[in-house]
Length: 279
Image (cartoon, rainbow, N blue to C red; front, side, top):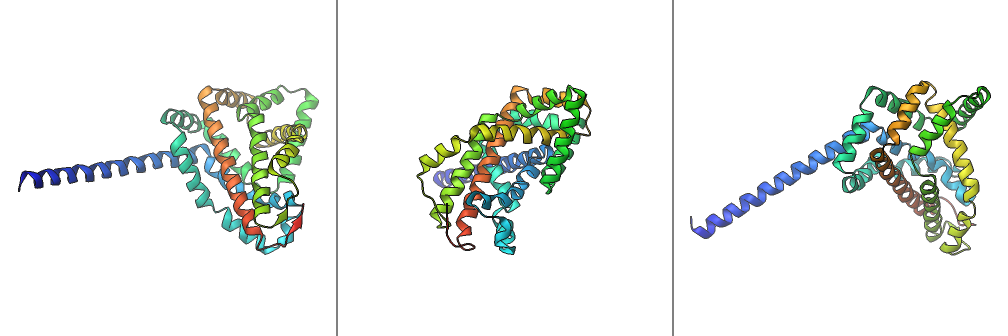
């Protein structure tokens, strides 16, 4: 074997081994992210995005029932769980550090963490939102009546899971992207420019903020009703940790990006289900 051939063979071997090691590292990273999604319950939170699809037609003055069984088939296709899961893995693989991942997993793998995930998963996937809302509001009313300090702890918990301002901006972005996609697909005739649409939504921020606060409080009251006051306080403490704050910032961003992306896909596909409507 000539020196040149030996060199080429060695170079090829190094290249192949590097590729194998890189592949193994990617697999290990994906396995850790998969574990993160499951342990934190974020996989179920992503799946629950599908349940919000029923409200999409409301943005253009229609109801999901107006489309009959076609809407159900469209939602099942566009909000494919595996696809949303893959999108989350792709984004998190580029944004979630090992340190943050380990911090979140350590908490949610604890006894309290796992009990919380079970309760949150059940709440996410409960389809009767009206019943959940009414039950939560009744719990809140009862806590107010007895002057329970638990209310303030629930508010702490809600505040720690995400910035209100960021959530409002994200919801507005979902609405804008859906409406612009619907207009581009010919589903609606949008009689304003994108900038005007954004300004119109911005003018509704006060009402949206109040609605979000009420909804979040009743939702938390319902979800954590079986937990002691001490458990709720411990959870709020854990969520206020700067590392957990960053984790939730990333998870919220991922969830809203996937929601906006899928709503755009719904709008594009709606043109085949419904003739144009004026907005």
